[in-house]
Length: 316
Image (cartoon, rainbow, N blue to C red; front, top):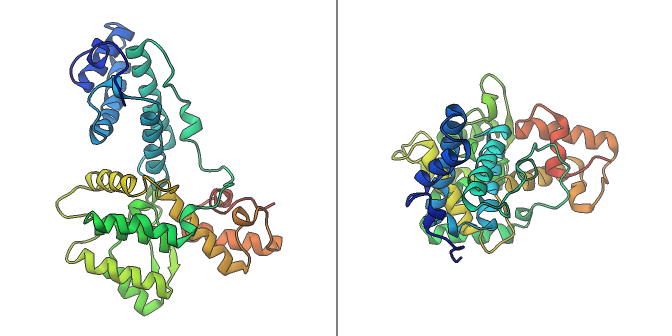
């Protein structure tokens, strides 16, 4: 990725964060203090991502850099860590700063197009539905000594958990529930705190029981899978970075793909028919399809039935 003309950071300063601040001052003048401060905070989030990618000069940012960052924000939305509005605002700031620095807009993207509400109808089968494909990044993570990231991905795949839910699952407690009740209740790390005082049970089977046992062994004396020497945010950023590396040469995108794969498998177990997103159209009788979506909405931690279409496809 070569530099695109001009001096470092297009002449706005040696450090990316400082260059962004100067670019915003250039765009807005000395007024608009609140607007500039808000943009600066969001731009700094982007520069942290760039640092992880080894990018220290705005001239090295290209379209793929911005799109990869949008994908990471989408993962954060799907995991419940940030809102759609916040993610879109961060991308808007990236647009503003880069347009100001470059004096053009070829890197500009439409935030709503890349980080939108998940009420769309899924049209492509989840890549992690093929477990042989899913094992490739898992093996890569183990080779990189990232067993905790690997087991977090397995929990997401086998229990249909968001990244935060998998990370904050107390596997010691969950394994006791599994052995006693043949199901576990997801209460920690849920989106919007929905797990508090609200049951969300996921049934145990031989595969996910084995995953739970592996997770317990890795958790050890910690209260969950977040390493004791990291905050949740530090762990999340580290895990997402490792997952991107592990899936770089695959078609797998983000942790949400694993929730979709879990949903498709569960749909087939409930209805006896493959999910519509796999077959191209609904094959289960309408009433059974609706019943399955109701069950899935509870298992996945959603309050709206229409969202399930973003996992398994259309009900038409």
